[in-house]
Length: 348
Image (cartoon, rainbow, N blue to C red; front, top):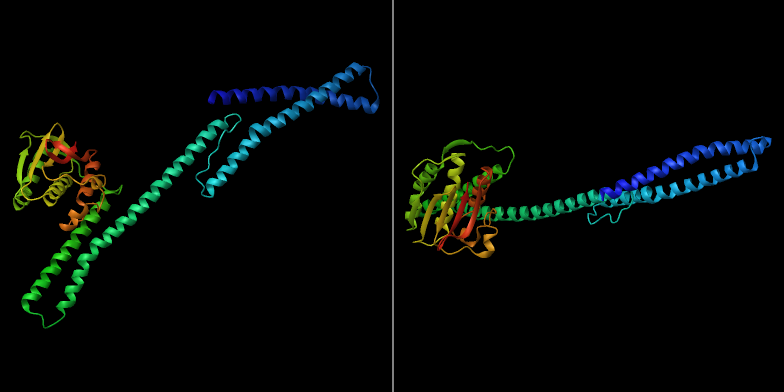
C-alpha cells in the first residue's frame, strides 16, 4: 500500500510539473495573442504562430481541468470522507470505518483511522465490562458488610433492655464483638486489595531465603491443619533459596493460600507444600473446585457458597494474586498438581 501511495503522489507531481510548464508557456503566449489582437498582428505573429498560441492555451485549460478533477478525486473527496468519519466518531459512533479510501497516502490514513476506532471500541468494551464488574463488586461488598452490621445493630438494641439476664447480655456482647471483628477484617482486606492496585504502592524488596519464609509460614499455620485434622507433608529445600521479594507480603500470600485450603476442604484432607524448580506447590486431595468457579477464582468476592458458609470474604486469593504479580511471578490453580492432588502453583 505504501508503494502504491508513493507512485500516485509521484505521478501527480509529474502532472503538476508539466502543467506548470504549459501554464508558464501558455500564459506568455496568451499575453502575446491578446496584445496582437488589440494592436494588430506584429511581424512575428503569423497565422502559424497564432495557431500555436491557441493550441497552447487550449492545452493549458485542459491540463488545468485534469488537475482539478485529480485534486477533487484524490484529495477533496478522501478528505471529505475522513472529515465525515471523524465527526461520526466524535458523536460517539464507534462502528464507523473508512473503506476503500483512494488517493496518495490516504490508504495509510485509512488504516490508521480504522485501527484507532478499533482501539476505541475495545477500550469502550473494557470500560463497560469493568463498570459491570465494579457494580457486582459493590453489591457483594454491601451484602457482606450488611450481615455483620445488621447483627451488631440488632444485639445493640437488645442490650438497651435492662431486664436481660446476665448470661444473655454476655452472649450478645460476644456476638457483637465477633461480628465487628468480621466487618473489620473485611474492611482491612478491601483496603489492602485497593492499595495493591495503585501505582503508588511499592513492595519492600530485599534478597532473602524464600524457602525459609515458606517453611516459617507453614509452621505458623500448623494449628489450622490440626484443627481440621488434615495431614501435612512438607518438602522444602534445606539449603537457602535466594530470591528478591517482600517478606511480609509473601507471607501474606502463603497465609491466604493455606487459609483457603483449610477452609474449603473437608476434615481429614491431605495437604502437600512443595518447593522445587522455582515453583511452590500448595496441593490437597480434596474435592475439585467447581468448573463455573475456576475462571473467577482470583476475582474478589468470588469464593462461592463455600466461602459464605465459612464466613470468608473471597478476597484472600485476589490479594495473593496481586502480590505475586507485583513480584513479576505467577499464581495459578490447577486441577492436577500431583497425581490425585489439585492445588495452587506459584511460579517464581
